[in-house]
Image 1 (cartoon, helix red, strand yellow):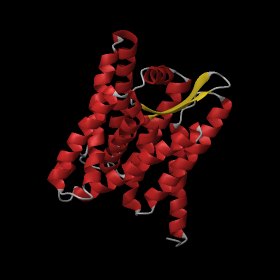
Image 2 (cartoon, helix red, strand yellow):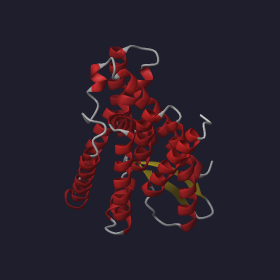
Image 3 (cartoon, helix red, strand yellow):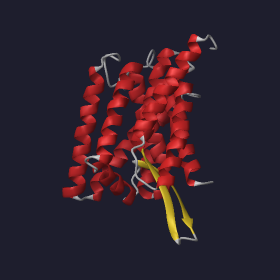
Amino acid sequence: MNLIARIVLLFLAAQILGLYTGFTLLLDAQDNPYVENLYITSDKEDAGNALIFFIYILVSAGLIIFLIRYIKSEWVFRIMEFFMVSVSSSIVLYAIARIWFGFDLSMEIGVAGGLLVALLKFFKQKAKNLAAVLATAGVGAIFGSSLGIYVSLLFLVLLSVYDYVAVFKTKHMVELANYMVKKDLAFTITAKRYVPEAKKESRIDLGTGDLIGPIFVAVSSFELGHYAPIFVLVGSTVTLFVFLKLALKGKVVLPALPPLAAGCIISLLVWYLVVLTGVI
């Protein structure tokens, strides 16, 4: 299997898990007060939430760059990684456990499983993709179930503009990505293989932020109808495949979020046209 196919499959796995987790959270919030407490907003339709979260992302990115340049302690990032993986993956594992068990037992399984995944990644680097996929699915599900569809789209557009500026203008996103790849942290998904002809390893990395964006848009689009998230899922996956083909062909570092955002928006427009024609 080539590198692009591996990344697309990992992306697709995160999208499906995130979509399922988000749907479970939306259903369980009606009867489980603990799930409702996971929501990060009190008003899903408040557009100001998109701006607040965007500012939070900017501040977080600034802090991470500061840590990379001046603190230079890998352990700080290992601790951040452990916390992110354990908390976020526990949400996904809770949703999976809900297939068979009730609220309380599923929550216990989720917490225990999240800690186990974080420990596995801490001691075994080969668990990186597993940890990254579960963590991004959890984060995307939380944002998607907490935001309305139009607020989600606004947030995604803001993130896409930031991604473009951070890669092509300030270039700090390239610095951040290089550090995450070098330390093999679970903030990217990775596909790699050894190329005997070139006597070197070839790899592709995709940041977890590029996975989270389409997930929260897909989850929040449940309010439009059950078919809308499927359109987002298909649109973002096809867009990623095309993007990776072009990026690999040109052998350049490109921001993935702008084209993914475009794919999400176009897929929702297609869904809208399909609904208008009465096909579904």
